[in-house]
Length: 289
Image (cartoon, rainbow, N blue to C red; front, side):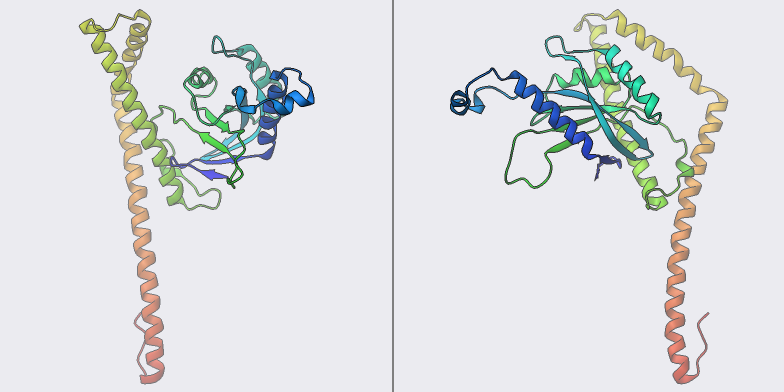
């Protein structure tokens, strides 16, 4: 189990590690040409780069906790950097029949670090999961390393929502304040990512207008479709709903502050009463409160 800077908690089951290791071992053994024992000992393992394997990870997400239970291999064409979508949808349908609550959380690969072609797989899986996770297993053996050579990358979706901020309840043994802080951290990361992508889009449109970048009609149609939706959030009902959510959030913040102050005052009064109780036994004084 590990936590991230965005407040998400990841739980990776051992079966996933076994599946990835087995996948890598099979592909590596199949990629080696048949040699005799003497040739195998004489050959250097550094003569050719280790193969990379790809697959999907499945599990459930409950609030800010992501639990990865299982995985399956991907049919990935390294030449065209394309996935077999029909195969993914079929595997997901089969898993849904046995485990209805499981869905595709992201994908896995092997290697020492993420590479540029990995973005093609990541973007393709965003059609299935808007915020896929990336599990990277380093198959290189390092005797001095004590931790498992596994890295989990996350991508926060461009979602801006204040739903249920005022109705957060403790989960996994954490306090409501901890859950609220983790949720707001995730929202802050999403806003930062959305802002950066809007800036990129603005620069591209400005470049098209100046003639520095060739025009892309498909991109312009998507931007036009997006802009046509903006007036829908300028209605009176939207402003009323937004202000209600905003006021509810502020109210919860004020109540939390009052609760903390009351708790602190209660502890202070208890200390005074304990001190005066000792003094009253000696000099006959009464309790403070």
